[in-house]
Length: 158
Image (cartoon, rainbow, N blue to C red; front, top):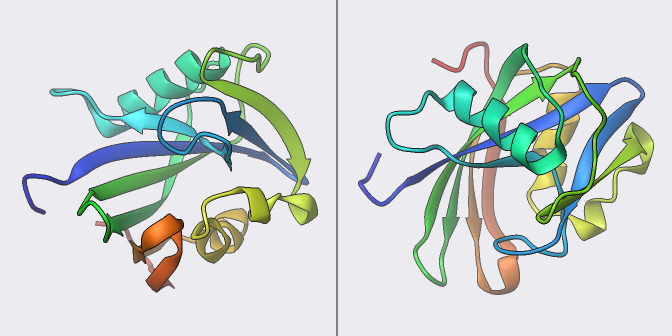
């Protein structure tokens, strides 16, 4: 793991047959539906960061997170490297509400708006919905087009 790799979290609430996604209103990934998440702060546990981010972005509290995936994203244009730890939450407290950054909305799993999401999401979300663990690498080109992808099911994330 190089020094420039940023550690990020992503949480998707999955209460079958629905998932809670949110429209990102500003910053990186604005204008796309996504899960909730963000940067892991210095000295912060990855799972704690995931819980903090979903709370800041949607007003809900999650306690039990299940880590299902680790994906490395590389952006060819600016050389940005991101490692995203992906968690599933089934239960939460509070009501999802719009914040400055995100506007949450429930989607049926067969109506997930992949055309308005990151192009790589369609490669891992089917595994996520089936509770499968996965690891992968995605290389994005200009306009966030996927140039290379390798996402595979794994028995363990360690």
